[in-house]
Length: 200
Picture 1 (cartoon, rainbow, N blue to C red):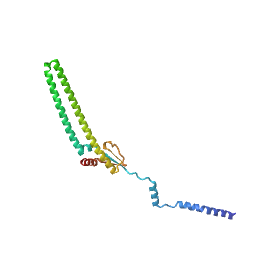
Picture 2 (cartoon, one colour):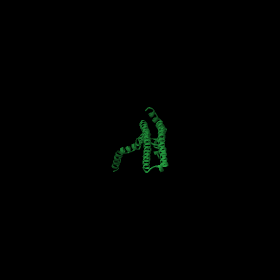
Picture 3 (tube, helix red, strand yellow):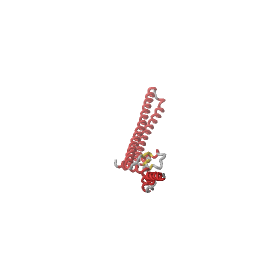
Picture 4 (cartoon, rainbow, N blue to C red):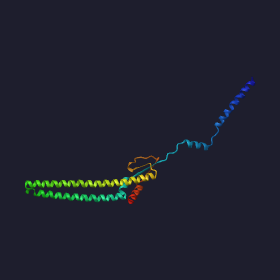
């Protein structure tokens, strides 16, 4: 009986010994370098910061060479138009006073003729004032469109060349977290706009 028990114990030891060996292998320490490599492979790659540029559009528009030139031209045009309109207004006022002073001496037919003449002059003056304002507004709109086109091209070219995700007007930025790489590009774009204007 003892022989039989011993045989069973020996057989059990032979069967269990490979499993115990495997268990021992599983608890063998893993080299630190392998652990680091495994952790690095499992960890997600750190996201690159998003490049965001901002520009003070008003500053570039006003301080650019084109902006300054356009401002001078518009100011001169406005002064000339105002001078012309004021000159016609004075003429109209002089005519009105002349008619009023002579009105008692006019016959009904003369009064009617002078009234029509004055009304015609008033309508011509109103037309001149309206056309002068429209001409100035058109010139101002054209200048604004040109400077915007110059700025837009400079921004697109610079943004593409320097891998910017987005470039916006400075006044539109309220908040940007630390994961974003934000840069004020106003001076860079101003120089690019001036260079483009000089080379036109």
